[in-house]
Image 1 (cartoon, rainbow, N blue to C red):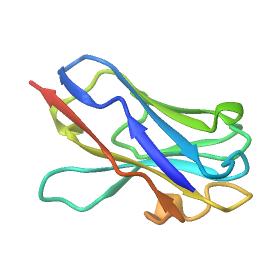
Image 2: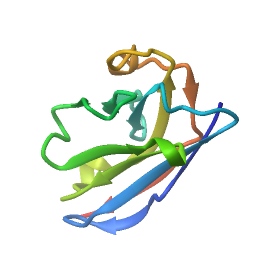
Image 3: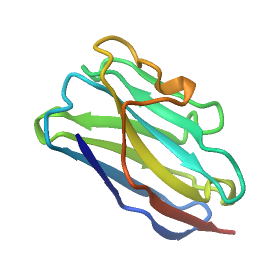
Image 4: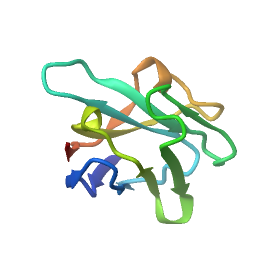
Length: 125
């Protein structure tokens, strides 16, 4: 499975961005999917996860109420809608897949089976 993240950019605080992560190589429709970010000088952190059926989502406290994860299984794509962006959201954002067929697998623990290359989000204050 190859994951390609896109949609990052430079925005002002308070703005919105939507990240996309498209999978290729095989379908990810039965995998849990997630987003992570890594700020400069910091470790990679969990942001959000969605189960394979898109019936459950899970968020880091820092993004609850501002970010929304969703997926389009027919298009093998997962999205991260980011609203009310803050300077603290500046980071490289990575998508990941976990082959777990239930829940979120090990994504909330910071692990995944497949990783994308990352897309940079810069929020200016």
